Image (tube, rainbow, N blue to C red; front, side, top):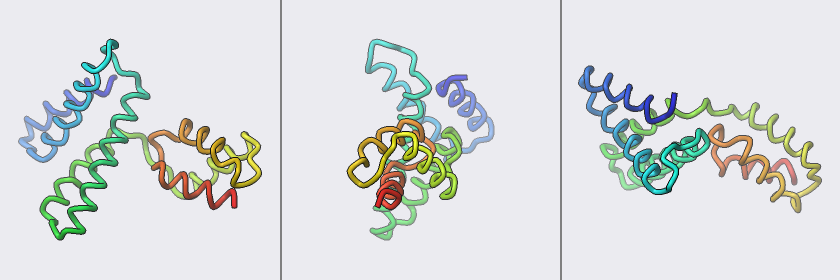
Length: 148
């Protein structure tokens, strides 16, 4: 089932349950999908496009929550974190630190990386294979430490 259909189904359930917070977050996701669909000539988003969209939305919510917390606006930070929780329901399960290390070691072995000069090769392969499963910043830090 496409992301758009899953979100629409969840919106109906949230309306019936009168869950305003969940409804707001789901409508935001649906809005992102609709905007993305109307951008290009292709009306159907691929699963990869949907994951990129959700990952970007999750990162925006996390960054906003961090800013709000730094400014002691816990009320606004809570809204962003609630939306982030709902967005995570539609993303694949995030890899644990051990799983991420194992996956990155496998990728380093596959591309034949030997040192920090091969970071570009490793990052290219890692971001493709781990898209949506781990944050790009975390992947970058792990790759740096593994290649050093």
